[in-house]
Amino acid sequence: MTRAFVFIICVISLVLTKTAAQQLSDPTKEEAVKLSGDYYWEEATAKTIDEAKSLSREYLLKKIIEDYNSKIDLNQVKSIQVEGIDYLLYIRGPKYRMIAFIQKKNVTELLENLKEMHSVEILHSDKYPDEVAKSEQNQKDDIITKEIQDESTNESISDNSVSPGNEKISSDTLIEQNSNIEDRQELANINLIKKGQGNSKDQIRKELSNIKDAAELSELINQYKLRGKLVFGRKEAFNNPDKCDIVIINPDTKEAVAYLFQKDNKFINYTTNEYITDFSSTFNGMTTLWIQFFEK
Amino acid sequence: MDTIFRKIIISIMFIFFFLTGFTLAQNGYKTVVKLTDLPDETLLQKMQTNATELLTEINNSFFQDRKPELNNGIIIEDAGQILNSLWETSPFRCYETLIIERVLQMQSDNGKKYQVRNIPVFIKDVFEANDDTLNLMDNNHYQEICLTFNSGGVIENIFYSLEANTYQKLLNEGITVSDIRRRAFILDFVENFRTAYNRKDINYLQKVYSDDALIITGKVIKTKPSDMINSLSGVQIEYQKQSKKEYINKLKDKIFKYNKYINILFEEIKITQDRVYPDIYGVTLKQYWNTTNYKDVGYLFLMIDFKDENNPIIHVRTWQPEDAKLTKEGVFTLNSFELVR
Image (cartoon, rainbow over all chains, first blue to last red; front, side):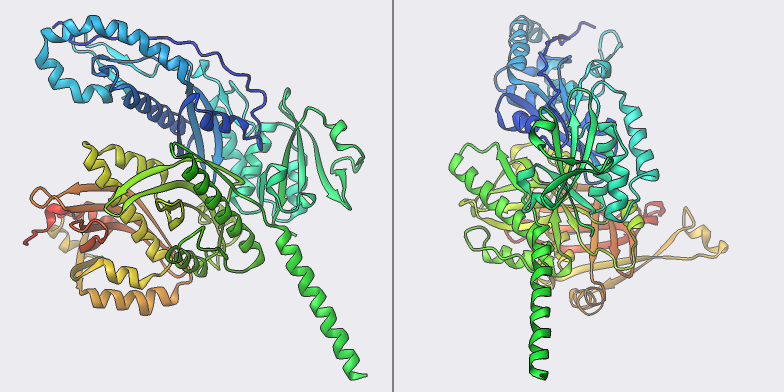
């Protein structure tokens, strides 16, 4: 049977913005994505990173399709292969929150390509109006369902075309980019069981100050946040930032370089007990994470 | 001498309470709300300001051990009362210092209203007996709230919302625009209905059940081996019928009275529309009921009449234990009841 629909693969390249600045407590990336108007974005929360990612991608594609359906008859499209979707990963309460986003200008390029191919395919669809009508409603969903069965060849065409290896997982929760998702999931689970069991402020401080890896530290801080032991954010968020502890992170190496607490309006390195006389110059270019404890 | 001593003691106590209060106040923090997807910039700004004020006041009240105090420009009186009743059951604070969310628009008969969803909150004192480890595993402290704004950008409702993906999925199942709109209203109703139990709002519940509502509660009967033949799976359920009055009195005099905190979660929500009466919807959901003294899991079915969209009425409420799935009659749906008008 002749194909009634065209299978289009459009590969778009996304010039990824430098993601080094995406650190815990620095929500500039989320703000840029959500508020600039330059991106299509959708988010999803789920118990696992994989599920959150899959759902956020599904919602994103659906959003793009809804937005463009009035301009181009996307029912003609069997599958869109999109490369260049980027992700932000957060931890919200007991769940992972993933924001899938793509620059609008790249989507416009993709749709321009579709438009050109679409004008040719209209002739085809005129030849097979019954098939078009029958499948019209379902085709929209086909674009985002996991597997599409091609009528003519019985080939299985997966739309799961965004290869995980190519995706940049960027996060302000200090989760390393390009690292293996399953590994991180496992890491999170291990942390849940073995770590994050401190109760007093001192226990928690000690545990946090011992961790150098920013991703691991992020997981742990979020566990304590979930337990209501602390809250973190920018300095401006707190009524009294002089009561906060500060984690200093090197954005290039993604390592926690110091854990500071404050006493008598002075910063003290928790590990070395050294006084930091000039905070700004000592940690110039570093990312700071302000933590407020709810324990005495 | 005695008078001087008393004055000293009073002064010391005053200083102590002042310092304690000051220390608690110091623990407060802001939650800044940034919103998007609303073309009216003035309205957007107002909603952002009001949401930020509300959440920051909630955070500060949490640590100062007092009720939130907000003026009418931020929240309407009715919503303020809803917040107070939620607060009385259990105070909460926002998990985050920054929230960036979309504004969702809803068109009702009373005009436009707006929602901001997915605001994570930490609930205090969920269960008295629970220790930290148990709370961590059960995630009992975690909830998400939704703020509803009127056309002027003032907060007009606050409720615990459904899990974000569930909400999205159920909306997406709508086929036509009007169906999606109706679904949004149904979900809005379900969320408010759930929150009414959280805040023990007996007046709201009294209002939403029709006077002749059919209320059925099932319980599993332990069967002897010889009785197995009567059921496919060996599970038998006995159903008890209650009047609205009986049900409401039981809620008021027993359940609400003896449980400090009621945590209800809804999952596996299914919405169906009656073929003959399009204003009648059936909502089936899995309910996790978790209170200070008791918890269970079961299936809840609600037959809701949306003839008056702003005042939906429940005609049928059934609760079946989880094992109902295994029985011949299964979980109740719209098809289980004959509707005569």
